[in-house]
Length: 81
Image 1 (cartoon, rainbow, N blue to C red):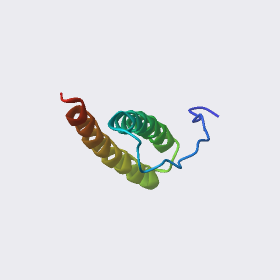
Image 2: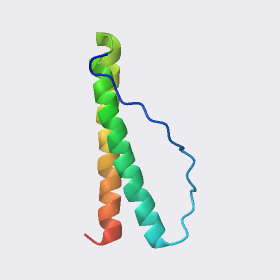
Image 3: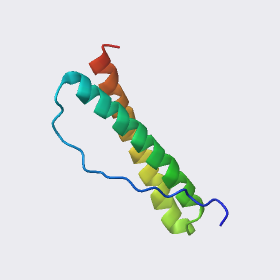
Image 4: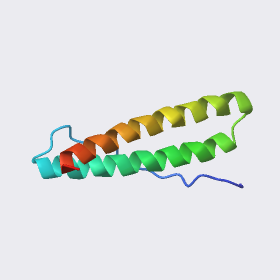
């Protein structure tokens, strides 16, 4: 199938308590990268979706990217940037 998305399985069970500020930072960095990967997957999915549904997916990606920008700002604050 052309433009097929590489599906992957992973566990989304994350502890909501980090042992240290460093662990919190590492977890947030991981989650931001993970979210960005999913946003890219959704963009590809929208390409193979009927027009009406595709527009909803594209709008969701915009929201996803806005959330990722906020997470990135949180990371910068935590790093003192």
